[in-house]
Amino acid sequence: MSVFTTVTADDLQPFLKRYAIGTLVDLKGIAAGVTNTNYFVTTTHGRYVLTLFETLRASELPYYVNLMAHLAQHGIAVAAPIANLDDAYIDTLNSRPTLLVTCVPGQVIDAPTPGQCAQVGEMLAQMHRSAAHYHGHMDNPRGLGWWRDTAESVYALMPPAEADFLRRELALQAEADFSTLPHGVVHADLFRDNVLMDGEQVGGFIDFYYACNDVLLYDVAITLNDWCVTADGDIDAERARALLKGYQGVRPLSDAEVAAWPLMLRGAAIRFWTSRLLDFHKPAAGEMTFAKDPGHFHRVLSRHVARRDFWV
Ligand SMILES: Nc1ncnc2c1ncn2[C@@H]1O[C@H](COP(=O)(O)OP(=O)(O)O)[C@@H](O)[C@H]1O
Ligand SMILES: N[C@@H](CCOP(=O)(O)O)C(=O)O
Image 1 (cartoon, rainbow, N blue to C red):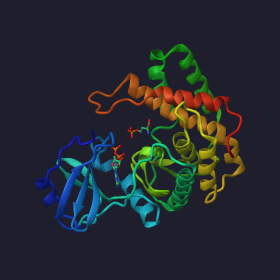
Image 2: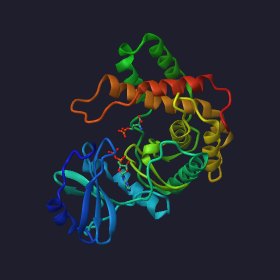
Image 3: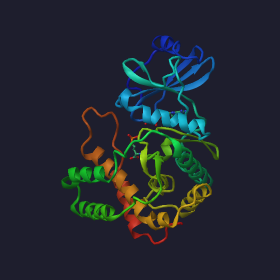
Image 4: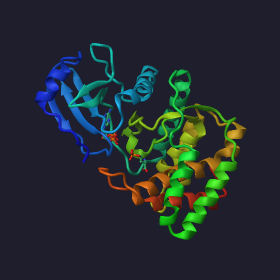
C-alpha cells in the first residue's frame, strides 16, 4: 500500500489552482510503490501522477526533478515534471514536498520478452547520451563505501559461508579501477518495477530517486541483473543479448568496458544484496515496506562468479 499521506479532493482543489492544468475530475490512490505516496490525478486537461515525498526533503529533490525535466526535454520516455505558476516543480501539499508529473503509458512487466529488453537497453543508452550535458551532480550515496559499511553491519547476522563470500567479493571490487570508464548520470535502480512498458515500447522510466553520477556501465549491469534474470537467479542469455544489443546500437561499449563487464555485473549484484540484507536484518524504525529477498542477489552473484560467457 503506498498511500501514506491521505489527500482528499478538498486538499487538492486549492493546490491545483497554483497550476495551469485545469480543474479536478478524479483522484485515485496508487497501491503499487513502496516509498512515497502516489495518486493518479485526472483534470480537465489530462492525467497526471501526484507524488508526496515521505522521506526526501524539498532541498534534496532538485537533482532528481531537474534531471527528469532535462530527459523529457530530450525526448527520453520519462515522466515529465509539471511546473506551478511560480515556475517551481516542487510544491507542498499536506506538509509534504510534492511533485506533479505527466502520466506515462503502459504497465510494469514481470516477464519481459527479448524485444522488450532490447527497447529498454536502447532507451537506457539514449538516456545516458542525453544526460551528458545535464548540469546537476550527485555522488553515488550507495557506492562501494556504502556496500562495505552495510556488509560490516550484517556479517554477524549472516551464515558464515555467505559472509565470507561477500567479504571476498567486496575485496575484489576494492581492487578494481573503474575510474577511466565512461561516467555520467545513471538511474541506478532501473528494475522492471521502475519502467512502464507500452506493448513492445518503453512507455516511461520512473522513480529517479537513486539517480546519481557514476560509471555508465554500472547502470547497464543493474538493469540487466533484473530485466534478464530467471526465477533461480540465473541470467537468460537471449534477453541479456537483446538488452546489450539494444544498448550498443546507440552507445557501443569500449574495449575497457567489455573487459570490466564481468566484475561490474558482480558489483551491481552486491549493491542490491547488501541493501536487501540491511532491510531484512535491520529494518529502519517505522519502515513501511516489506523486505525483499536478499537471497536472490546472493544467487545472482554466485551465478556471475561461475559464469564464463557474458554476452558481449
Ligand atoms: N508517471 C507515471 N505514470 C504512470 N504511472 C505511474 C507514474 N509514476 C508512478 N506510477 C505508478 O505508480 C507506481 C508506484 O510508483 P513508484 O515511483 O515506483 O513509487 P515509489 O516511489 O513509492 O516506489 C508505479 O508502479 C506505477 O504504476
Ligand atoms: N530495486 C531495489 C529496491 C530499491 O529500493 P526501493 O526503496 O525503491 O524499494 C530492490 O529490488 O532491491
